[in-house]
Length: 274
Ligand code: BTN
Image 1: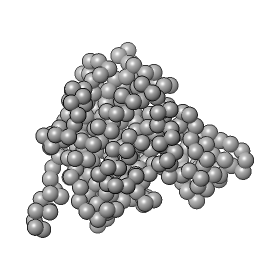
Image 2: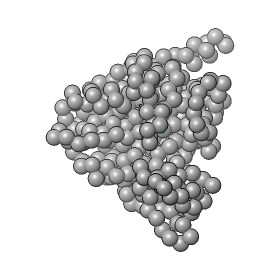
Image 3: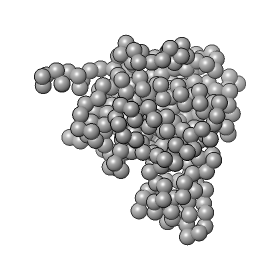
């Protein structure tokens, strides 16, 4: 019994099990699904491979069991130990222009939370702009990278989810973190979660392209970890204390500093609860 449990825990990511749970529509769109045993960063690989994508319906997915140069937002490293977590990048070419993509990053967190909900039975909260939290601890992160060229706008969404990582493992994560198995006290099938992540990002591709961020705003507010909380926002050389009131139509954080309203844009600011 114990042995069986351990085998399950160490089951590697594999294409067959991931494909099993994907919708026909997504399988049709997916021109590449590759799983690397080890790679620098799945986002970098996805960006390179996007050059081979031909039209706006197509997409690609790159997974890795381990990343040697996993990247987080704001130039941080993303801790990526082998065979315990999910590291995936999903990419496509969009006809939307870069300014139309405001809010994409927040919307990606909403899709991921919505898709995890049925299998974990709890809503993953989002710390603006898109950190994924369970009981005040970071369980995952999202790195959205976009650029435009003559083919359109290339979009790569990288997701790192702590799934089976145990707190006994040595790592250098510089904030309170958790994993699905620590939080729920049980193991999860990484192939199932991998498939769910692809469905979430495929939904994002379709819904965001047709409806933009307005489709996601209300749900984001429901999941907003910082809403109505006293926070400290750090901009370049400035620190502000205030209350997070919510988010704007295009995903800025509405921050009330003693009656003075700031609209904080992601990328310019880091924020934490006081
Ligand atoms: C963050 O919270 O800072 C974002 C973390 C994003 C990590 C993922 S793991 C898959 C993809 N490849 C990377 O190098 N980064 C993203």
